Length: 258
Image (cartoon, rainbow, N blue to C red; front, side, top):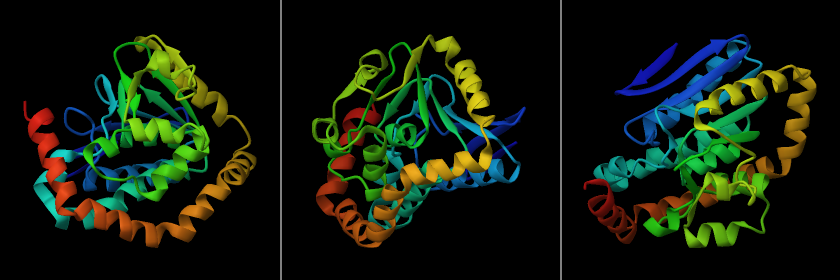
């Protein structure tokens, strides 16, 4: 099955208890408001259908290039107010899914794309030209708290400053020894390997797995819940500011429209 909202499509396929959720939005599988809302819906459908595990991937040769800056540039300050909560909800829908979620990182995982991969339980990356990293500060906007806590849970606090402050992206081969991905396999094998692992993890007792996953992630969920409202207000103010929107416009004109 698949769902479409204003031309945005996220596919959901169920095969022997494993749900394959595929981002399919534009050339970069980018995240706009509708895509984020659709991702939440697809995961709810996977849960309702009794999926024992999920594989999250992107269409074509791209996992996710992050926030749809074209939509942000076009929508401006008014767009931000709807988009940022939807973005956090999408991150948290993946992070909080009670059953195993395996990322099949089939290409670039940039900015919000890296956060989505970090929100999964395991990251299998395709060897090749794909790169991974977080670039928000290069564009001039901060992450919402949900994104930072998800990355803190997955990678620990120590590597985050150099990772985020530099805005650097690395190949998947370089990402492996840094712990940014868990496996690197040939590109043609990434989806089959992700399905294989998802199937194995999905065979674990569901209730015990869900409880253990919640135990592991509880401190991060708690910090998000306690601070999200105040942090969202600050982050929205900065994303809506004239300097930030001007930086986004400059980036779009320089990089995305050429």
